[in-house]
Image 1 (cartoon, rainbow, N blue to C red):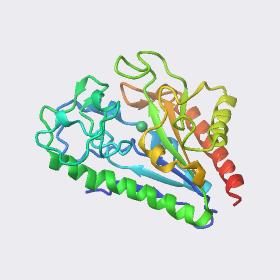
Image 2 (tube, protein in one colour; image 1 turned 30 degrees about the vertical axis):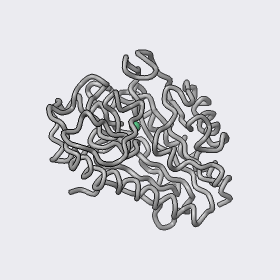
Image 3 (spheres, rainbow, N blue to C red; image 1 turned 45 degrees about the horizontal axis):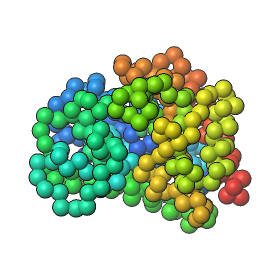
Image 4 (spheres, protein in one colour; image 1 turned 135 degrees about the vertical axis):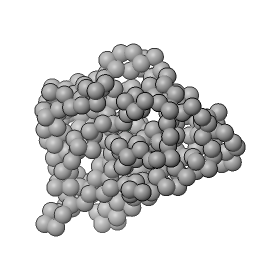
Amino acid sequence: MTEPVIVSRPGAGTMAIPLVFDSPHSGLEYPADMKPSLATNILRRSEDTFVDQLFKGVDQLGAVMVEATFPRCYIDPNRTTEDIEITALADAWTRTVKPSIKTNRGTGLVWTKIGGVHPIYDRKLTAAEVQGRIDNYWAPYHETLAAETERLYADFGGVWHINCHSMPARGDETTEDGPVDRADFVLGDRDGTTCAAAFTETVRDFLAGRGYDVAVNWPMKGVELVRKHGRPDENRHSLQIEINRRLYMDEIALTKNDRYDETAAVIADMTAAIATFVRSNAAV
Ligand SMILES: [Zn+2]
């Protein structure tokens, strides 16, 4: 089995800063025991395709990058382990269950639908199967991300985290925003609770200054990863960034479009601006 998580840290000669990026939804290695019945091209619409590539190179800024190698529809690191869809299981789940707004759409901890309508499986999953995905994929991802942030927090007394995602260009009938076009970027700090306002504003101002339309906390406000890592009163800051896929890819063919290079250059400049913000706030 491939390692479920890859970590890139700054190399020798690069000054480390307390900045961690994570890309939980760009993994492409579908485990053999997943056995989906849905066509791969539809299954793959759940991925945050190319997000790991768009943020590549942040280690050269002194930051850390944590990436999942497994796909988010197999098990989603951005959900709690209590976000279980009981009706999708063949047998009893004996641990706590706390479904979220995502669960009914089939996009809880273990996804059962793509786009709220395409069933992934023609069978029910066993509780043991779900527990195995938690133990072998979800938990190592969370442990790795926590270890990196704790290490930097111990060294610097503060840590900044960017949770990297992409979103379909439009919502649909099953999403909170409905079938409407989305902003170029959506930033999420769970209504100002997961980072200092200045962190969100720095990123928003950078992107708006490049002419992009930027929404904050709508229709996505951040889910489990920013909730878990963002405690601004302890100088731990966590912000979710959603990039609109129309800025860099063809969502049906799953290929880069003619705007990819321009968007990748903007993301590189944005991460450099974030690193500058972190250096001044962490006094490194
Ligand atoms: Zn995502």
